[in-house]
Image (cartoon, rainbow over all chains, first blue to last red; front, top):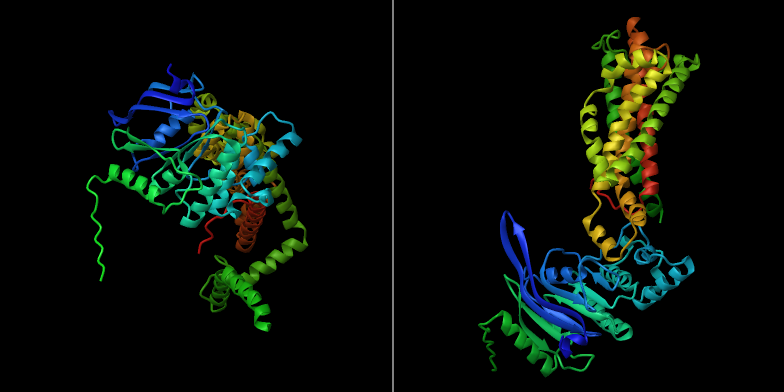
Length: 261
Length: 264
């Protein structure tokens, strides 16, 4: 074990994942090597079908059967655990449970007062203190996703996995929630792994951006983002990084024409 | 101001008219055709005659007695069916092993019409109340158990994943996710079960009874009193509708999170 992996929370080495479809085998992920430090925010970008969600589901413990090594705090992942929380693209709130019961869904083995306190703290954290008695269908998309984040954080996981959590939100709500997740990250110091197809989002949030290629899913490039937060999406450095990542997806860059009269 | 007040009322009235319009039109046409002599009163007596017979039977206490007896039989059979159907349905729905153990017998017994059980039911339980309750139980049991199992099996896989991620204990998952999620299907099973219970009570009473709505119909048939037959038929229809409405009301009270397609 070298120094880099020793300080890492999550270590992925030589990860392969195959799917059997109609008797044939499809390689979803091939030779993935990635070490994520404690407290780091890592974004993973790739086009749809590149296996980035599969990678996240393997880390979450929702996929079984992979070859290679995925270790968290030195232990090989073989199933879900409370050390990892996950937020999906759909909020997945249980429609008949109130907001507070949805958040308390993941809290088990606590006394009632203790549980209520933890739920209240987490609703405060995502800015939904006044909505504890609401049902999910009474919430907007952004609010639902906030509840989902609170639910995922309720057991204080060391690692929060975000699977395109803002993909279904409108542009303004999306930006709001991106700022919100940064604020939560800075407060809680949870290690974050975000999967997205939005390059801007990946750069805005991540300490590093992992660029994945399509079929089979491999890591093409890892781009460090050495920019101060809060980041300005139109700053020169931001745009340069965006260009660099863009170039990974569209080899033949379109030449922009500008006419000045 | 006035129009704001009356508009919702007008709309309500309009909906009521839409709701009752077709039935009232059929009764009106039926009455007129009878008056004009197009309908043989022995084969199909006019609505006015049926109403009159209804009133006479009601006043004499015969009709309430028959209704009461039939309702008690339906409720007895239906209650047993609901308790066993829900209980077994939940147990089978939650266990693959139980499903394999009971699957074949349920699949084979289910398509047998309850009426086909009548000869055996009479041999086993005699011609008293027990045989009728047994027939009703059989009719109501299968829709309830099948829908309960189906409802449980349709638990959204996405919630299963969330529960796994959060290490939610099984009993909590069952009570907070599986059973509430199965509730709409269970309520459908209960409503279908109640409807089948009414079909069965009449069938059972047609064959061996000296009371009940089914008996009233059968007795009137032998005396060629088609007006009494129709009173019995309509009574069953109305009671069935009222009971279904009560369950729907209950469903609405329990299932508050569902925003269902309402037809428009």
